[in-house]
Image 1 (tube, one colour):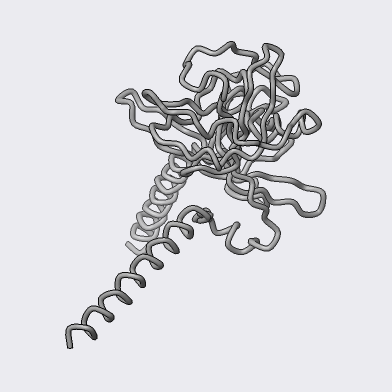
Image 2 (cartoon, rainbow, N blue to C red):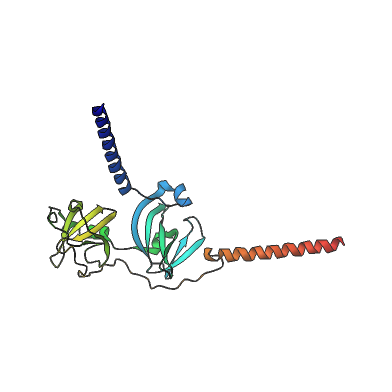
Amino acid sequence: MLRKSTRWMTWFMLFLFIFFLASKTAKADLIIEPDDAFYRSHRSSCTYVSRSFIANGEEGYSSIYVNPESKLIVDKVTNGTEFYVSFSYDKQNSAWVYCLVPIYAEDGSVSYKKGWIPEKDCLLKYDGIAFCDDHISELKEYQGEFEQYQIKKEIFVWSYPGSGEIAKRFKEFDPSRITSVYTDEQGQTWGYIQYHLGQVNAWVCISDPENEDLPVRKIVKGDLIPPVEPEWGLKDGKNLPFLSAAVLVVAVAAGTILLIRRFYKRK
């Protein structure tokens, strides 16, 4: 009886272990789809992006639309504003991106304005993927250069070598996640990480992993059009609540006048 109980417990623990591993893998590969009606009805024509963009409209700002088939503008963002793009839509030579633009309140809280922006009105922010593409011929296969490193406090992972932007900090790190290495002009070696604990397409400085003040060499692709504070018209989505209220008031007033006239005519 004891043997059967032990065997059952062993199988149960093995099942839990496998379930735990499967759930971690599923979470790592999970793609969160936007809660957007247009996306749901055009899912087959949308492509997963998951990269940052910069507003760069011809008028000095970019307009956020309800969807690519609507003329209704829900917000306008000045050029230079950075935002996250989860998916793109491309059909009939018209490319759009679904964006989440951060809105920072005075109390420090952050909300997001969501909608669709024409791809021509924004620039792709230079990142780890772009750097990898630009230096593909200079990359070498990772040979375990970081295997023996012992973390003293924490290591920094950067968006790309010389970016000056810390993507994440790690107190624990799995060196096997490094896929290739790059040596910069100063002779420092960098490791490219495609995925590690939720951080994707980033770089760690193998030569000096815990230095927060590495030399900065920002890379900007494309010309940023000077920003202009956007103006709002009556037909823009931001003014629709006020416009609708005004129309409602006028309609009620007109209806009241008609009722009064009919009342007096009957008399």
